[in-house]
Length: 612
Image (cartoon, rainbow, N blue to C red; front, top):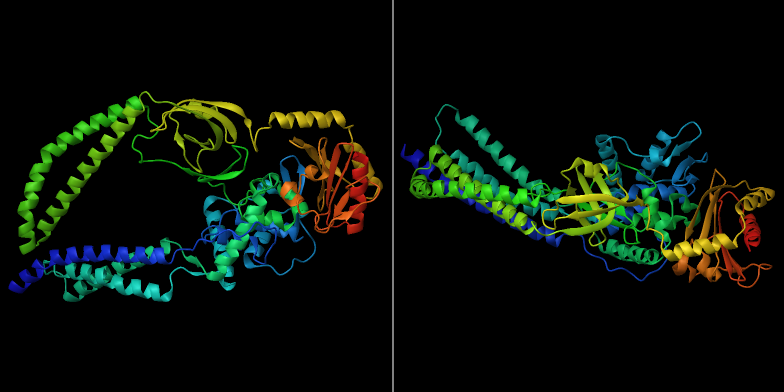
């Protein structure tokens, strides 16, 4: 009996020691996590050089060693650039994938997975609309994504660019250290006085099981902190790819290129998608389910990624009317204060009486009383704090209003997330009036009046049409009007002219930009021709496909084209003709991979002469 009492008296100190050892182990884990986190890479010089890593691997490298969701559409674009399949524009904002009859080259497992997905959706003619490329319901899509992610990580490790974040030595050190709290917790339970009904064997098995559970729970934490870390070779590769991202981001046209522009941009578009600077191409290929927490926005004149958060309990009272939040906060604050005033003194006195007894004889009832009193005090304290914060925020918002105008990037009734261009992380408003949510749609420009602290929406209205890109400026409208006035209706003539050369083209889209008018014509099978006409500037300024950044490098491989005036040139590596005459500049990009190179030049020259 004396031995049992002595063993029972050691239970509380052992439990405290187990808690302290858990805290120490968590600190040790934090130190190792910081020491083994992915290392940042400084962007290299802006350059247009491509390297051997596939776009999906590049996505992992530039996203802190995590595969970004844009890696899937980037892989599909890369397959199109490598002529495994084609992506054609059939009408404005509509694209189709066409499988090629030829056998694909050797592909990585994740590339095969994307290709198999397209094959599974394609009809007998090998065609699938791009809007049908989603990877199925949420649960099925999660499984598909896990397989893709695992294959990309394996390829990255095989290339020597990343390794496991937790080395064997680090995991061994964490495992050994985790034995201390596991053993202490098990021993603390073992020495608790029992009723003697169970056998010693059953008790030992229960204690051992508890130790294993504690140890396993602790060792599961490193997995949740990320699994990859870049190697020195990976840091160097990341630096090079960040240089390409800087280069592509400088081009004002690149982010607006549709998926079908891969016939012109080749692998630059797929790598731009992986690097996060080809927003329009990624948005046109909805592979996977749409993320509620990550959205693309064009608000402010430039495509960028916005991360959306849906506040639930923090801050307290989010979305409520300020008067209601202040009133409810004050009510619960007073009630919690009354309860705290009534129960806190006796609870503290009881703890002061029980603790010495629990140390000398820690029976189950004493330990239960300590835990119960502590939890009750904690609940009252949290209620006091939340009520005070809610009352304060509601009071601050009573007479404060904020006018917001931006793009509705996510509409999930009753939540509306609006990007106003001031931050890359936005909090979705909890709109309490259903008629306000029904008045807006995702992608529309909205105007709202909200409270600054609690985000209560007083008014919400649609301020503009659905926008897939920045609104046209006055300069854009002026340039388009000038171009329209200066040009005859040449598109049918261009189609007929291409037909006389044995190339069947059909116009699929047209538009106006700050530099003039542009058209897209497709052969309906393998690619397209893009034409741009500028009515006030030189040939380099007219090029909508290369823009001012790549235009500086047109001298690389540029070949003069005789008979089209001064400055006419053909760039074989881009299949692009630029020419100008009497204030009008023309760019013709022939993205028809099945057409021989010399016939591409002939077609571009004929079209260019017709427009000049």
